Length: 391
Image (cartoon, rainbow, N blue to C red; front, side):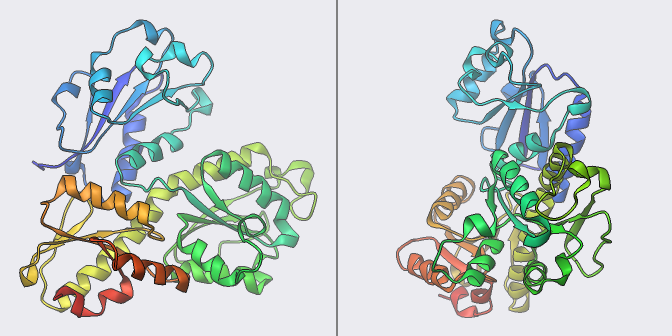
């Protein structure tokens, strides 16, 4: 029996088969490399027995007149500063569908019947368990002559889903090196949404973006136009095929081309569904790089279910935390605080990250941070220099 578990509390009255949601969430946890022994679902009866030292998030499924009912455990959860996600079918009369303690918390509408969509709820649960970073970042790659207006449609849709969305016409400031900034933003993206239109693969620049994503282990969602086949050379890709009926008025490219709302919803849902797997792959890359270097040099490593690594060689109790994307001071502070609750206070904490594609100015900034902070930030390139193990 594992001592450490990710805990998901379930309260309220779901209006669907709860086993469907549990199965989907279990699948996402598997994608993240979390085996069933390290997570559990707690019903209302089991909530008072939760392990206060393990990560916890609660979902409250709202229903009509819930504000009249008493849920004593909710006050305890709020008092312990733990996250509760109020979930409703729609936000109409929201204040009547949740207990009074939750009215001030933003609710999440997931629909019902044929419109039921769990994708945003699943990622919200994983983010609150710190298994997905809360920075939600998307990179849209497209051919301007073919799909500029569709790219703008998706930009608006992703922004509405709380993604920080990169689109070259909106996200690059004047008087900067465009290519370097493209690679930097790509390195910090969860998923690349590639609009694989008829002329996409004829452009040098768009093919460079695809090649860079493949070379830096970033997941690509190929949105395939009706006449376009899957690219056999895309190693880290998922494919979503569009049909002629995916577009308004039959226009599939050019200034008049627009996607139907149902197609936009399907693309957003697909991104949500693959985001966990995409970040898990990059996390695994950092872990593999680190562990291979340690084993090659006779250093014993310990992999913890909380997704960090520890060593105790050379008389130093050290912890190494893989960080996806571009580290910054705020994220470094979050990591240090999280480790403080999970590991001994005398541990030397290090953040490891993938430096491929990052701006040189940002790399210099991280070196500067290392000279001012107790916690250290180490790139994959740094890992190959064994001196820092013995410092």
